Image (cartoon, rainbow, N blue to C red; front, side, top):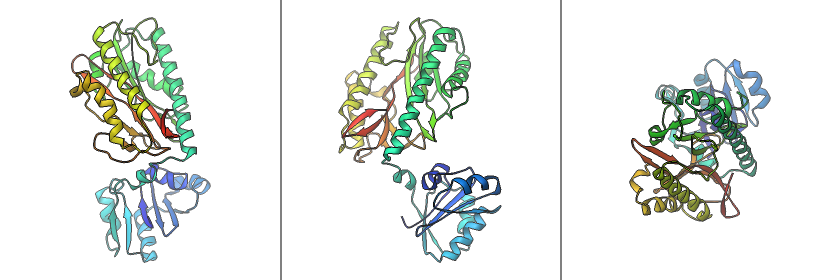
Length: 340
């Protein structure tokens, strides 16, 4: 892509190694401009690579001057980046065709570099340590605590007392609340033999991790994949989801369509008779954003390649009872899926 303009923070970071929450980045035939305000001048001039840093109180106005001076006829942009107000103000009086290219930065980031894979691997390692700290707390002091309080403690332990940024607010869901894939915490208490779902991740050098585990309140509480539940139905559903996830990971190969991975996972759950309770896609890409490409769903025919990173997270959700989701983040390496 010859000429393009960006405003998304992670898209800009990918281009030049620095970003902030008030920036416009323009690339015209290889000449790059990082336009921001004086609050970010020191860091931008120190850290932004291969671009001219321009400090201004009028980012749109300065961008228009650069575009006018360039005399280009067309420029690509992601319509997800700009508000309608900003877009209309930006293109007003410019004799330039603005070409919509939705998510073009995510498409550029579809195949990770070896360095990016290692950063995600470190984020996953730090995330696992957070899960361990949280499970140790739950086993010792989690009994009769509310979801809201456990949500607060999950943020504390996942971030290692604020040392790490979180990929997203954790999901901490007990019993029937776990049947909501994106459950919000309530005042429900965590009592003996209660079912618990935790979905959480952390960032390492801006790159995200993502993992979901299920367990129950008992003396041996942990977040390992092998789990024993008091309820026979919980055990049956958990074992079905685990089999679904493990099959999808084991069978994933470079050269397959993303939709095939979704089918591997879905077939197991449908065969067990719970197909209609698997209500979301099997996975999503992970990187600078927690949701990137490739999407692992029944409609996506993108071909898997080495160094693509994505989650595998099948689930079964029984409304009013409980829900099971098991999630790992994998990288395609040497033709196969490797859990990070």
